[in-house]
Length: 288
Length: 338
Image (cartoon, rainbow over all chains, first blue to last red):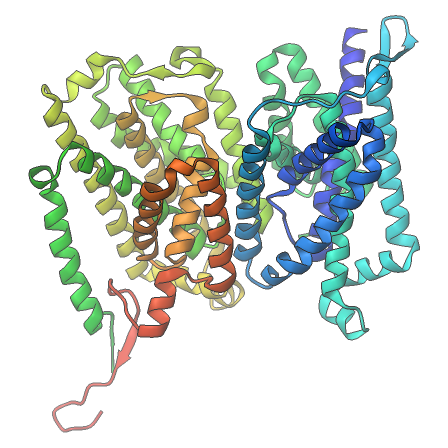
């Protein structure tokens, strides 16, 4: 029963990783951009939520109503004002510019909020639990977080395959030049994709901040989790990414149960093992 | 027609380098302790940046995980010196082959990832190394360990001699690294590497074995980076997983140096290191604001001068310090015909 509990907790945190990961794979899919500052933007969302809860006395989950649009705006502006100028044949400019951005966000947050650990208080909901079976309990908050993650992925899936914006995003992803010929403004589409990506990780950032302590330096590790979930799940598949997040979450939970020092290591090792035996991921949709 | 490497500016450049080398080799006779330490630190960054430049600038392997090999080298040195009583200077030269050996399976694994995902993959590997290092309790586990005084004393009896020795070691490692990179780029393989840098697809279509060359460059870089890492931690005398595998110190700064100086040019890292240290000596007191500023400078340079300061100088003025480029020279024979 103890192990079942461990696995269940791993599955639930996997939802959070899947949200990190969908944000990353979305912009990679649309514009082949890998955002090194991705993790730091997640942390930025957590701090914006911190400001909202402290300044307006909002509940962290209510603060999503503010954090999500703000992050989406930041994403749109970032893409239009900076990242669009780095896209092209050469791989280096987007990589190095987002690397610089990562350093700027980390040190900016450090300057504004110091290196102190913070946590968002969500009140009574944090300690609410349901009993599933004897000795098997499930927290309300992790459950909400997982349900939200599944809803976000389902929503993105609908958006991609059922709406005009989704059609534009897929067209740009397939062939940028042809998409442009049909009258799509790819700079605008890219900026919308980035806005969407940051909206998703805004949700993830707030849940992260409610669940655990955060400080300005934890961004890179979130980027790595996002990346591992994407690769495990297979490029281009959103449900695959959810599976990837869950596999990563479960591996970490099992590792932590064996020895607390093995939590992160276990996740990395499963990632490397999957890379070794199935480099295209478990549920790939596109190659490259 | 013949192919020549040298130009007038490169002949002047080589002469200047020879003079600079003599002056630097004699630094213990003209510099004080602080100058020697600063110069030695600059040399290690020139070496690290040159190796990263070979990897990213020439072979197109943009790694953000070279701290894996810096830390590996450091830990190999500490393990050999503390557990097996190996002379630490000798241990530096053992760290190189071990770095190369470890690079082989790492490359086989992460070469499955392409482009930017390759970059993050290298970072995961560095994280794995860091977490593994913190599990080794014989070397201090997560909190790290200091090199015992007996090991340090075994290097040279007096403190001054040790400092001279460390300085010359740094100079030697850097010059050897630069010379190796220079010879590699001058060789047939260097021509292939330059072709890959300019256009990978075109290079492949002319029959260059792109995978093999990239693999070789990755392993060679692991060799050099581990040696430099071993030296760095011999100088620091203390190692911990967080300092050994620091992404800021061994990758962010190194990338900054290479980008500012000029990526894809052998002179770039040298120019970049000089600028980086000038900025650091001036602004380091600002703390995190200084790092923030560096990130901004890197972005500005990448957007407006993607070839770096040296790249700009080369394009505007046609300079090259080291004779690397090949150009055809028309030479008339005795009868006056070309």
